[in-house]
Image (cartoon, rainbow, N blue to C red; front, side, top):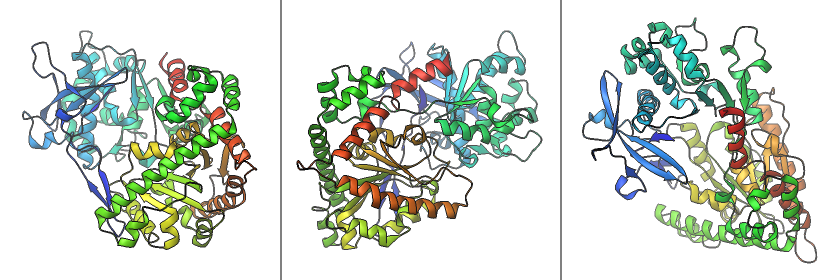
Length: 566
């Protein structure tokens, strides 16, 4: 795999007392990271060069061993480069459009040149999202400037057979696109000449409508045109992508005939299943429990053998650990912000390990509908403040640094934080990262997901929750359309996508509250003489048995190999 070594990576999130997100960037030093610089045969740093903005930019190379996969990272922060070019690999998000173009030139063009220097000959080049689409042009350039001096048409035909593209974005605005003038500035004229293309022909590669000179240059159109296969990341996303990119096919092509397929995302079970649950799986399914997941019926039978008491006790212990984590994180964050003493101290005793705990953690973006739960504050407060059947919420997520609307959403959540009822039952954990994610997905009772249909390409956090016996309460979008079977979680709203957004939001909010009040809460607090919620535990088992065998990365990789690569 090939990527970029970002000097400052993604930001650390800090919230002010008023709830405003601040971004803090810490410099990453290779000397203290688990990476090694790649050297050439003479012991000097290996490098690749890419011409951009009318000058040559050099990148050194670092290697990371991610399990059995070698990941190579390109780094322009070296003395040989101009100061501006040293910042090409400065930040993941945070630069302007021009920085984005040159980052993608480095990744695509520089990535191919790196593989050549390493003498790595991929059977297939897999473009994950459009960011690496320029690699297709570099492969074509090798052929047009090679010993056979192929035409671009001939070269493109060969390149297509070697490249596949996975799109992760279900809305046009989410796909990278740039003004033609910016492409011209970053590429100059030499690259299109090397491809044997006229200027307009070069720009048309990134356009849907080649008759529209004002259309911006899109990386996804380029990738679709230059790859033999395009896939979405869920059944629904494949359908949405066919409609989204229909115009790239000949006039008259029906949406159903657009050659875009899907491979639904999956997650690595051995990474995300809690060790405590893995012990149960080993006890009742054997050491090879993950292999047994390939046989869904056998796996389901094994999960059913786990005694309700053992599964429930394991889950309760995980939730106790989560609440200890939440208390500690919250206390230190409030201390650091110099919050009111009462509010800071409340973190030490917040949350009840026996209360229904709902997790909501994801990127803060408009379509994720963070405010849906706040549409009826009175009903929300009744859920939180119910003395006999309380509901508590853990929130976490980052807003894009340039998304002011998302930051305002976070700030609006802060309005509630000093309410004594909310103080006991709801918390926002700042600086959402993998550690917070692992604690949440392994321990919450319910995972809430309310994207605006059909804007969720797949989603994977709910898959991680399901593997741990958590129950999904989600809009029917992305992967949940395929996962939900009425026995392993709950669905919010209908699948109608034609309604006005305001009407859809109101309808889904009503559905969310109704399902919580009439189904989720009563079922969680329904206990037998032994104190076990039998119906709830039955759903936990169904969640594990029906979802883990399907939405794991083993199945996903097999499907890519069988349907996409071969």
